[in-house]
Length: 332
Image (tube, rainbow, N blue to C red; front, side, top):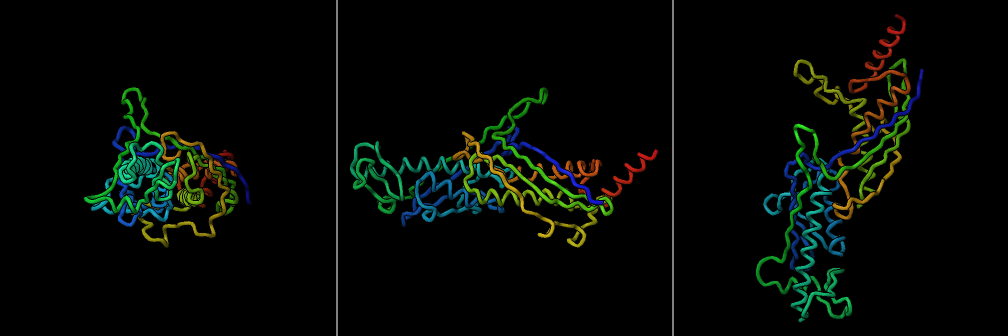
């Protein structure tokens, strides 16, 4: 017999290391001899789109084309430490460091343009389209290329550091501000449960994610898709099957993962509520998009068959066993 059920789960997640642990990112912005701008930051790309966001934040701050920015990352010889690609922190932490470095860079550009243009002040100077010019007269301008050619010794660059707000929790009272900022998620799923085979099929899903400000909506949608499928896999498929400390499912013929035949299109809802301390309001959402998925699926299973599964993954044998146990108890 096929039974349907719906489930909902909500979650909140504190980005960054948290609990008073130093959470620091550093960035360097440098003007190249060809007039392009290099960003040096030790932020690792692990598929979350960090490199794209870093360049977008720099381009927006400097008011230049993305094509005029060269990003250097994952190079410990040339890049400053930006912390790990963990805790959904790179967009917020390292994005802030890049934005601060770019803002300092703008002031350095203005100071150099003042010198080249023989001005008595940097007031009224605008940085745009790889030029620095007087707001009152665009004829009085100097290009990034010209500024670079006027740098005689060393690098023309700016550096900045950003430290996330985090306070260690009081061990006696449990009070404190361990994370900042927080992001919020909600997941709704509808499932079909076959009471004869124990197989669970997801037939509809919606996911709403608070992103602060969507710097790149397409990447956010991709992140939601990936997070949902990881949560689905964690809930219904993945089982290491550890016996006496030994992993029994040690190959993919035994350790099951969902394929494209097991996944569905998700209705994705991006919630924008800009975070005042974030770069252009953007929060990190790397891990939050996975968290509410399994609880939502389990709630939907319960709604369908009135049986609560308390051990993951919720494989068919566990569902059949739980159904038999309930039936046996009802007969007592």
